[in-house]
Image (cartoon, rainbow, N blue to C red; front, side, top):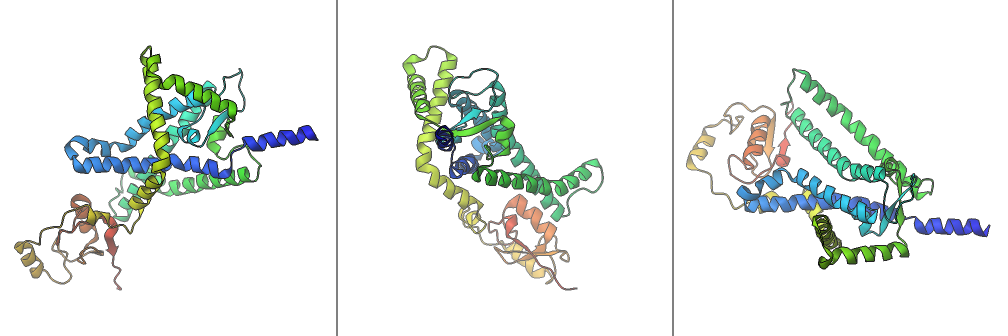
Length: 343
């Protein structure tokens, strides 16, 4: 009985809490939006030089994520977020004995696939889905050919796939909390690893490796220089995350909040409407669109100015010009309000 009790005690100490695993899961998802908005600031200040950074921010973050995750998996047996919360990955099955804080080649490759490739693909599919749904709502989705058929099939399929995946994540979390499973995520099951809390021996090994890697005088070749550079970057990120964690969360909320009038704050005060525009408006009938000057179809009001347009006219104009065509006020497609008139 004593041996059995000791085994349970060791296992429970080795097992991370549900709060730790959820926190490390959400860390990288918080970091990516902050990086995107940093690229946006650069692009707005100097579009000619840094505009491409915002255009390819997903690919740039993918490359950065691949490099940093490979470094931490190879040297610490954990992802960047897991290392931040003092967790490690433990192989469940291995044909040979491995060094401490190291993974088998198979687990390493699969870990990179789930840490780097899977989030990128998931975000890409979600972005395509939102674009297609908006096109369908605008009635601008092509109706002929095999490509529109696939697009409509994807529009119907993706919400179900997303629901099944999120439900699976919830089931794994519940089973992990109840002690019924070693895995809090199906991705860990795919990798053939489980998460564990680091012990004193692990911390000693990490301190020795860090001391050797951070010593510039020990560099003898290019690979060692690369390890030194990545260790410096990782150390900087790890130390700064404690200070900037709240700031990253605030940025994520600020830019994702629908109530934040950031489009108005980021633009200068527009000039008053031109005299020719005023005369043009006075010549229109009450039911005409100020853009196409024809009878309005699918009446839509732009909330920043109060003018009513055709839905297709104002949507295309706002997407292209990012302002009200009459007043010049900064505007976004999220500020369009459809008006449904009784027949």
